[in-house]
Length: 67
Image (cartoon, rainbow, N blue to C red; front, side, top):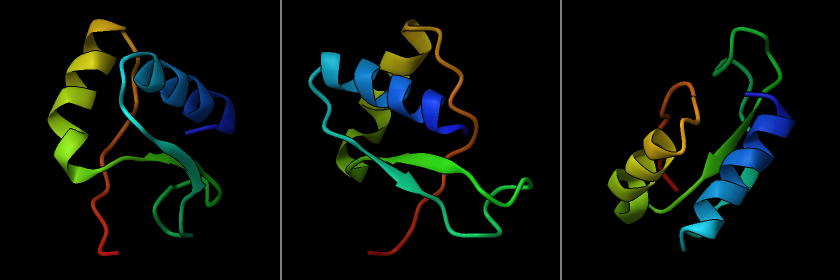
């Protein structure tokens, strides 16, 4: 996703009490090579998906990483 969309997603999540952070995705995750994502806790994933669906925000795909 673009940095603008990532910031919008972060704003929508924050407005609904979900902590998140805009991050640059590793190369190879996106077909365009350079993309941004929004990092959230795995515990918040289900709620975040519902919030974004209700808010009509298309977030693309979900990538789960080891940290």
